[in-house]
Image (cartoon, rainbow, N blue to C red; front, side, top):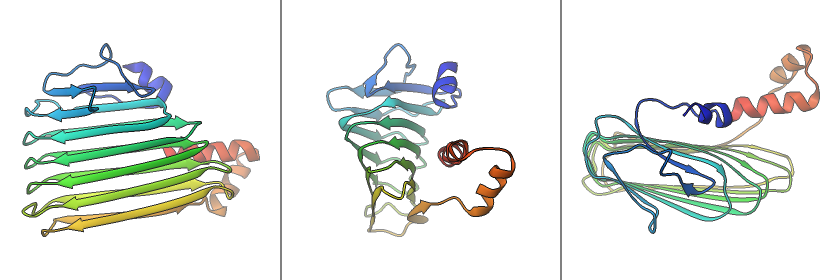
Length: 230
C-alpha cells in the first residue's frame, strides 16, 4: 500500500484493512478476516477480537450524503480510521461509532479540504465500561465555503471509566463560514470526557520565519496549510 503514502500521505502498518476510495469500497485493496462489511448499510462490524489492529482507510474526493457506521462488538479491539478527503461539491459525512466492548479503542483522524459546503457529524456512543472513542477532525476551509462540524459523545449508563475525545480544528479563509457544535450526553462516570473545537491561525513569528527562508506568499500559505493538516 505504498501508493497510499505517496498519493495521500497515509501511513500503513500491519493490520486488517478496509479501503475506501472516492466513497467506494475497494475489495481488492482490503485485507481482513475479523471484520464484516455490509455495503447496503455501510456498516463495519468487529465481532471477533482481531490479532492485529484494524485500519479503516477512507481517501479521495467525496460528494453528496455519505454514511459510515462502525460497530465494535469484540473485546480488546484496536481500530484506527484515517479519513483524508477533498470535497469540491457539497458533501455531508455522517459517522456513527458504537463501542460495546470492554478495553476496545477507536482512534479516528479526519482531514478534509473543503472547497464548497461540508458538513461532518460524528457520534461516538459508549455502551460498556472501559471503552475508548477518540476522533480528531481538521479541515482547511477555503474562500466562500461553509464548514459545519458537529460532534456528540454519548456515555451511556454503566459505561463507567470510558474515555472520550471528539475534537475539531479549522484553518479558515477570512471569507469562509464556520459552524462548530460540540455536545455531550454523560450518564455514568467517565475516565475522561473531552470535547473541544478551535480555529487555527498562523502567528506572525511563523510567517516571518518562512519569509526569511525565502518563501513567497503563496508558498507560505501552502506550507502552513500542509503543516496544519498533517
